[in-house]
Image (tube, rainbow, N blue to C red):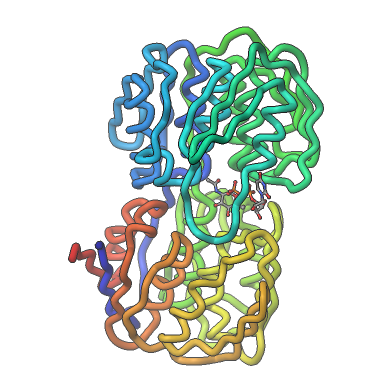
Length: 417
Ligand code: UD1
């Protein structure tokens, strides 16, 4: 097990550069399967999630070369074979191999995807989309077998604006015959980034970023060069950390519009935050106004930032609330934060915080990726040294977190026990 030890209460100043978006990269890497020639994706974060996906591509027979932040993929040597759980269980996004392999080979065999335990996380909408395109689906034990003679464009309505289902259906539809329309599509920036990638390869996708995406199938896709957008959740996490303990923390390489739900909330709370074209500067305030947040699909307040944001609510005057509407079990960080002195009452998908409180060090456990980010944020502001267990979860999604925080003054160690 990997653990982090963080000596808290050291003000942070300097610059943190935001990496490429995890949630784009984890779709772009499997999507490269659809191309006939080499694909170069730059600004891919070096995190375990992207490592596992590259290893899965290699297992399938692709040549994958990583040079610093770029990944060059030769998909032409891929053989379509069963993806076992040792690859698929390590992360949720392995489900993108379904859409990509179905689109390219019309047949997929994959063990059930894994991922953070933050709720039931069914994939019924992904499967409904594949079926609408003409695939038959068998679920035998822990394996999905998808098969299609040919894929034909269809009108697909998503009951929930799911990020994963929207991207997966795009992947399956780009090489299908005719026109596919996805209604009630998710609008997250990562979806636009993936659609741009596919269009660079020769696909015909319009409407990404709106709730109606139209895909006109093409015969083949070629390799291309593509850049991953900055990670808005990483940017948001460090911005929250800046509001907690920043002396003058510059968060650089961001698209401010992508984190507007957070920054406007922070301003409402009285945060000291200045926003520029591709960076922001945040400083800690001694007192914050209480507030309420409700997680929503983009451009609403992101569920992924709800967990780190809750740490800031412990610094607000009076009662604040969080309502989680996307996942049914995304409050596991709260019992850990209570060990650090947080005053919070959880009822169903609503949590009520009383502040301000001074957080103190404790030994805590990261239960999932963003829960881990919340614990890091709390530990940085707490008195004393906090030990966070199971930080493998954090390393799945935050590139170079130890160095990035150390460079701005944090006292943080990573140990293997
Ligand atoms: C993605 C992100 C994750 C983020 C989430 C919401 C990736 C790899 N992960 O996850 O970081 O927290 O979007 O912004 O990009 N649902 C169904 N049936 C389905 C699919 C989803 O009921 O077939 C439900 C889910 O259980 C959840 C809601 O829809 O309650 C939203 O899920 P979705 O947008 O699909 O999230 P992910 O793609 O898993």
